[in-house]
Image 1 (cartoon, rainbow, N blue to C red):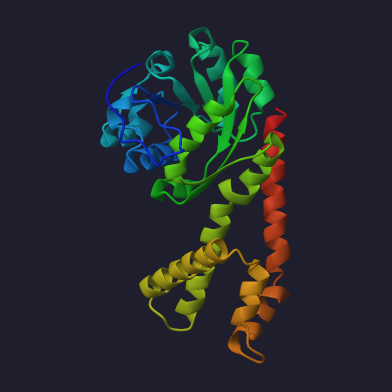
Image 2: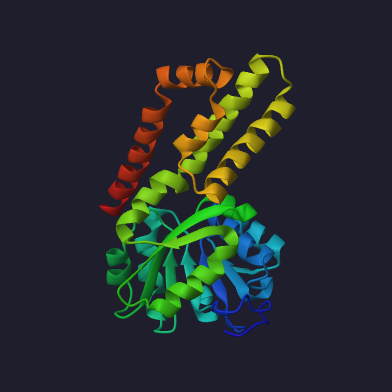
Length: 286
């Protein structure tokens, strides 16, 4: 499984990524390429040490542009890599698991990125003792600003979870949680970026309506969201506290917020997270 040398190790106290480690992706869609790009941009794994498989060349082109090895054979990924990400559509995962099971060894770490597919299902369809974890990334992993939650199966240990965190940390925030939080994270962040894009579009459209050119409005809307998010993370303040700091009595902000309240923004967003979570849970029952 040794191909090339990995990048220099990180800070003291962090688990080093073995130089011989090869990482594989079964499925090569947007999320897989986003995670791979995050690893590559941070230099955690070199392109020569990443393999991807897919039925056609349509999605593999992205991995080829990174300089990674590609194949149409899933078994080849297992034979070349220790850490293997399952990045197919949820309904295809059971078929893929049955296909690759004969090639899975105790050395492999199998990481599912599929919404709704439980650790129990993964473990039942793979050889006994297989180290299995679940992760739900988000599309901004592509620009190293994603949010990832991981949960470990019964045979995955501390070192396995630490290695996965080390691999994924360049993609953004990476936290371990009980599996019960995975579907919630899907509704909150995995799908949540689409809610934010919708809000950003509406924000910019409002400025266009009032006379601002679209390109400028789009840039300012995006920067507004970025700045607001950064303040939440860096100050640790509750969003309500930060919102109140913007409002002055009788000012523009409180009048605008009143319109959002009349439109039911808060409850609509909460309902969206609930709907996304429930859909992820439904996928797990199939």
